[in-house]
Length: 430
Figure 1 (cartoon, one colour):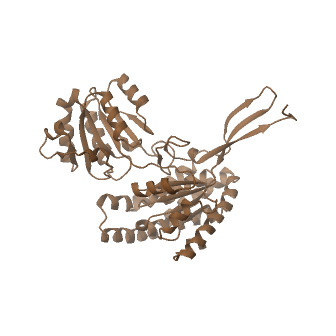
Figure 2 (cartoon, helix red, strand yellow; figure 1 turned 180 degrees about the vertical axis):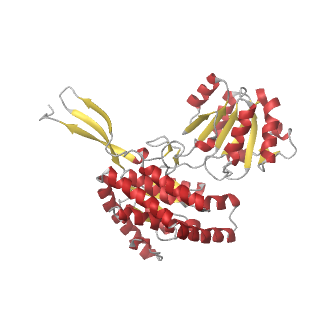
Figure 3 (cartoon, helix red, strand yellow; figure 1 turned 120 degrees about the vertical axis):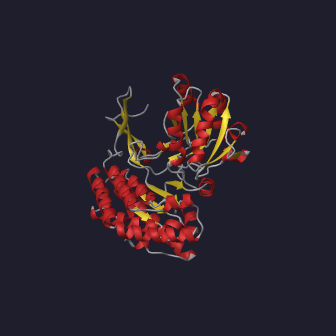
């Protein structure tokens, strides 16, 4: 464990520490930018091995975090995001290995063209530099973010929330051991060694010009603060208000399977469905089975008048329900008047994250995919595929819902920029 992982408190000490972390990260980023692919791959494989070797220590640290979260009255969905077990630690290690196996995104020639004067111009992928990741309860983000940044030639500065501090520290220590075993600087991935909120403000200020991009992963208040205060570019989504639209031509059996998975597989992830829209043209046959299925699975249903009419257990939906990311076993259900009404609802209330249409009508699906302005749009599949690993990215650093640079799962390719390399033979400009 590097010295920068020692726990620090006190305003002056925190400011000095954070700026030192920024300087160390900048130096590490310069080294990583020219590190050969084989060394980066080796470092990540060593990190995965270290995670497995230190599984007991990671689980012990996580048990303390979970116990504290329970004492603090955190919701079951929050505990689920925080908790680790042997299978989840193995999944974290496997994810690091998956990132290691990805092609190196740095140095790719994205385009080549020759000008009439003979200049040959290449657009070549380059690292972003130093990436700051501010996250809350998910300890796996420590490894995923560190691995993705390293593979893309970036240094990472990671700031975890208080509830996952012990878990993230144990994961970071294991990752650092593997990274240094391959000869790379431990500063390639640094965990901010304090729970003090001041550290977040210092990161948003850019650490004296040493931070190039911020990625927030957490609740609405965190992401809103980052977007409002950051002096560096931000990859972020504000909410995961994901919709499933059961179109008039949806197969009922498929709809039941997909809707149940989209809502209940893991309710606390950003790709979980929060609103179900059912076409009025199929409501007579599809609405009651879908609502009953959700209720019987332990999901609370908040619905419009048509939805309340099919089951007495449905409670009325308010205007706020259409705008709510529950991250829990709760769903809002509404009957809509066709495709245009469904898309209008999504446009009004959605967060541009992930939306799914269930239909056997190819023309309706094509319109939905083309016209819904979300980062991920799905046909006949669960919204819970909104995940970098499921996209073949190995992992993700987050889901970006903006429209600039990166959108959707942010993997290694999205963690690069580019420059233009111009090759001449003595040309001068007239």
